[in-house]
Length: 310
Image 1 (cartoon, helix red, strand yellow):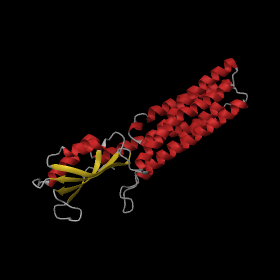
Image 2 (cartoon, rainbow, N blue to C red; image 1 turned 135 degrees about the vertical axis):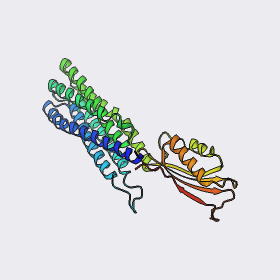
Image 3 (spheres, rainbow, N blue to C red; image 1 turned 45 degrees about the horizontal axis):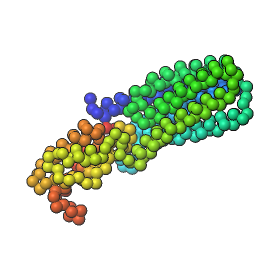
């Protein structure tokens, strides 16, 4: 089985899980909006708003997977894989704005509390928790393999915490009558979500800005290349990601004049960085000692790493 085929199967599995989570989340989001309207609970509305962003995030993630399947062409030589990262960035921004809105509404409600039907609020919140737990189980494993899925997972994860908060608020309001607890829980949900949303946005922006992928130390990559027999120096080393799990490297490698077997060195470097750093696409330029930028001779060799993951 080829690496590309295996990667395609993994993505297909991600899509199936996203679709199942989307059906669960959207269906309950509608019920939760109705419940928030009936009970008058801001905490429940906050949870419903997060459910809405969950549905949007899951739908966008599914669309991103479909677009990312499109093959590379002359205009987009890496294909459309990066659309997944654009989707994760959009999801992060959307959730960030929703969290800010909920914080604002919670602040307003502290001064103008409204009557809340705690029993209905509790029932809806418990059902929401069940839906969130199912969705989290569906997306949990895949969240470590794709930033796109991770964004959707964080949305559902924050909703799970929100549902727990709403359940606590409903119980407190039922037995104490403290309506302000509803606003307090809504604000707590917003504050809990913001830093995690920022982390997702930062990771997405790092990919879009072609930064070094998380978990890869550029100095260690350089030292690994230098450890290959025949390699004298390394320069113009670049490592970045096209999308989650698709790392790319380009580098100029200086070899000694006595190293005549350039293909062997290329193969060794490619195998080393693929195994140690999960870099599946390598472009390596070999240069002999004394090579100058203005003296391109037959000693200048190019090799495009043959290990592609699409």
